[in-house]
Length: 167
Image (tube, rainbow, N blue to C red; front, side, top):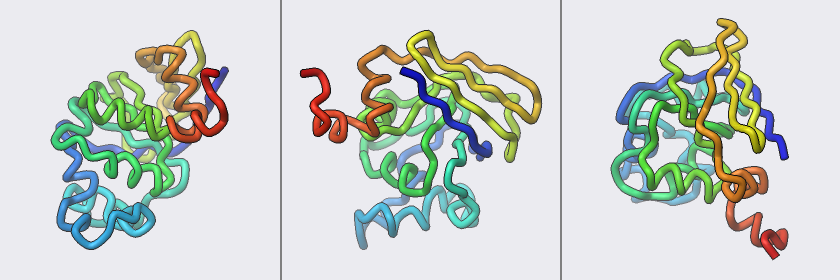
């Protein structure tokens, strides 16, 4: 099984918590990720959500997704068209929510990646490689266990189960 993604890097910093991803004031009105995606990372950059293009790849520093364990943070990122997050480290809860919802979490030091660089991600049973095509840099990400790889490729736990996975 091989997964390939290509997109534009969108940089954020360290300690991006789930309330930065989607603020709790927005969740009071609705939990519809198609509405909430308009407010993605608004506390970090009010113009961020409007500038996201389908296929963009979020690039962060340490401790991405820290804070509360709300799954809606992952689903809002996916609803915005982002299919992968490359970060030095993730909150364990965010990491597992990402896998369960089909968002690819790539653990790698992407400090050399700049906003707007073109990235390609190749993931297979041997590991994950992130190529920064703009800078000709290759990053090696922590490999996913085969079970998690299957979940991400299926689009998350629910689509995986619906397709009869692990029977």
